[in-house]
Length: 120
Image (cartoon, rainbow, N blue to C red):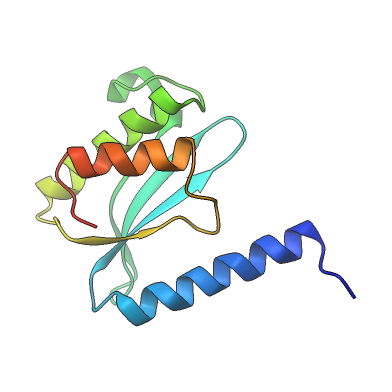
C-alpha cells in the first residue's frame, strides 16, 4: 500500500535524523521548523537535551526581524540564530532541515547562518 504524504514526510524526517546522528560526531544540531506563516530555528545539544540558542519569526520587531514566512524573514532568522549561538560559544553545527527540501526559505536560512559565522 502506498504511503500518504504525511507518512512520507515523517519517514524522510526520521531518515535525515538517523543520518545526522551518524555523521554528527557530537556537534550540536541546527534544527529548522517551517510552517505556512512562520519559520524558526534552534541550536540543540542532543547529548544534554537542551536548546542552546533559538530564533523565530514570531519574535517580530523586538528581535529586529520581519514577521512572516518569506525568504527575507528566513534570512533574518538564520542570521539571528547564528549570532545567538556564537555568543554562547558554538561555531560548529550539523544542519537539520527536518525533512524539508533544501530550497527557498530553508536554503535562505542556512545561507544566512553560514554568512553570520556558523560552520556546517
